[in-house]
Image 1 (cartoon, rainbow, N blue to C red):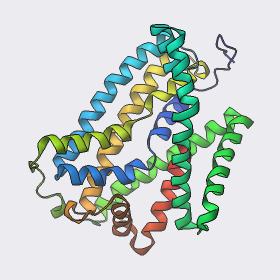
Image 2 (cartoon, helix red, strand yellow; image 1 turned 60 degrees about the vertical axis):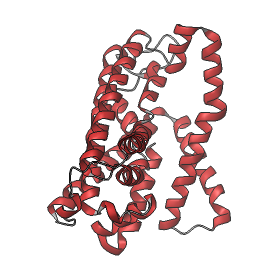
Image 3 (cartoon, rainbow, N blue to C red; image 1 turned 90 degrees about the vertical axis):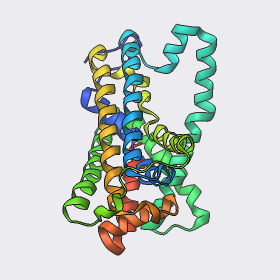
Length: 294
């Protein structure tokens, strides 16, 4: 099997690379962010338009990273690009910030969030939840240490389940008539504070797209990186944009914007509209799978 200059085995193909992008980026945000965005912009047209604009902007970033990853197809991603552009000192500081602040913080946020949703499926005593969150982190880490083949296959399965369920929500919500077309009216409505509305919507959208660039960290383990990395980045961003637009659209169809009081309440409202009283448990299970993949 092909190896990189650093000795890493290039065992990941295009499918795994795309799954890494989609699996990491689509986490709990898609179930919570549309609520805040909808409250901010006030109409479906603005909401869907923001997703499209941010998707196009993200694609521009992906094209830039495609060029960088093709030129420097080695493990490290942004660390490598900073090192080549600005020298070892800047890259060194960036690496330590990731190690000590960014990555541990995000991992903790995801694991605590996952535990809170796990509690809705299998009740966990409050004092015991931090321990469960830590065990989840160690279990996922152990899985990656045991073998990349096993962890990559699990990632593919979780990502496929996640995407399949999200598109099931879209199709079931529309074809089963679970929503009301009146919830989308007025489709075009100018917010009173355009700048504030756009700012609130853009922040949520950028947050939901965050993380697509992390694929380049394992460029040293991607087969034929000059070809597969650019393709994976572009395909991954296009899938993310399509999923966010489709899911947000059906969410607005299921729940009227005026009835949204909070992000968590919104997720419960969508679940109840789709699956009745069991909606909270179903949605919690999907969020658990989504966060595990991320």
